[in-house]
Length: 154
Image (cartoon, rainbow, N blue to C red; front, top):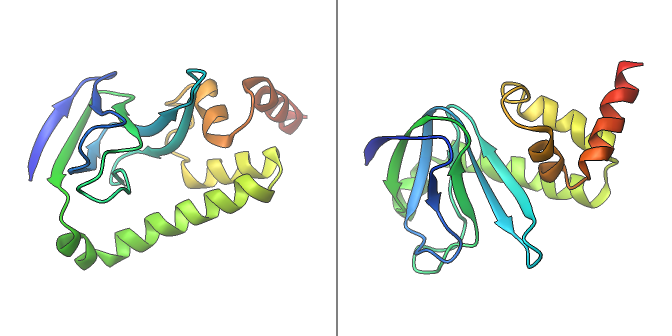
């Protein structure tokens, strides 16, 4: 375990890298994302202060996700250790619950409901990320997000 400082824009992990780290955010903001065959980014998860972010692939397999810093951040870098992580079952269950809800929402909720859930899940980062990133996370076009926000102001 080591604590490091990373700068905004630093890439901590690339898709295809050996999957050996878990990142705990002390301060700042990280995100995980994938890039499709057309070069479009799809944000999987944000990790503000006190959140943990990692690729879910087993330690011996290559990563699926990129992880980068959206702000200057202080993070704790841990080597993947299933035994240690299984002892922190509360954090693991929270992460699974957030991701399960996200998948269900992407399959069946309206764009408005997805945005409302984003506000509840990440209230501390709404002003810290771009509208394009929020739209990517929600699986909608930035124009759709703008329309939702305009309608909510009425």
